Image 1 (cartoon, rainbow, N blue to C red):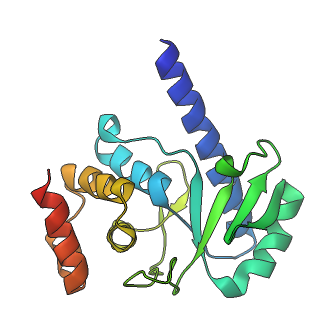
Image 2 (spheres, rainbow, N blue to C red):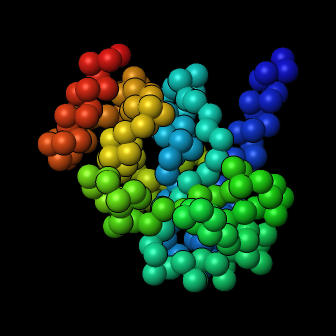
Image 3 (cartoon, helix red, strand yellow):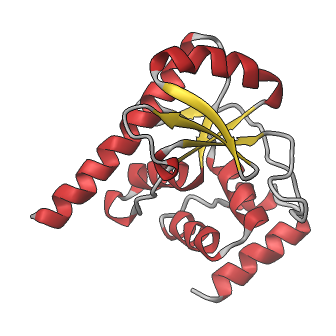
Length: 187
């Protein structure tokens, strides 16, 4: 089936980029965690592969203090650092389009000035693909902080397979709990 082949090819490309990027950093002793849509995909896939939605890029959360060390570690492996229009990214030499790059956000900082909370920095967990990803609690926190339409859909995906536990919900600030309630009310 052509559609399935396209999907599998796109997934394989994303997994390849995420695996290579995180393996280089892990080998260099630098902490990172895959976040965003791919992080959500990898958690949902573990519970219900048919409920997992594919994302178009790879997002990673890192410590800002590690940026120079990360640049030095990944460039010999084909990832070129770029800062374009306020976005930090590593463009993969195998696929130089910006939308297929590894997009960077920094833990402990707000992504946008009007965000209500900063990016959390819990230790990563390993996916079935041996990619270090942010734990579900951190992804829920980030998605509820960003709260765009695609973030709300990602929250529905996590909630739909039971990954947003009462413990995760209890760990949210009141504004984020209100946003979670808003998403649940629209399902």
